Length: 157
Image (cartoon, rainbow, N blue to C red):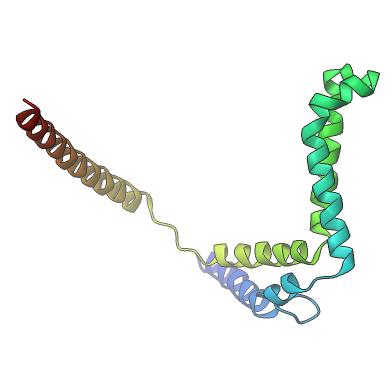
């Protein structure tokens, strides 16, 4: 038990140290927001390539078989669509916004290590409480529906 606790404490201290060093910070010392706000001609070109490749991926299935004979094969079209989507993702990952998104994912993984998940008994208890509240609200809505139906029947005749 003590060995497991020591191991857990060392993992927590490593996570805290890593979080302290990288939480919301790029390697250049800028925060993720500052990195995402910076714009450059390279970013605009990469965004343009990504946009063109995604539009091309949507049009491959409709336009390419009429222009290029090998595209009549389904697997060829699937391969071209997949390649265009991968190209778009790679282009977007190379932008400043893509770098800040990677920083965000690292920060989220650090935060997920700190989460205290409910036990099985707590989950079952909360589930039953939720189902009970849902049943009560459903009953109230049913009563209101019947009341308003009766009221409309009285007025309409």
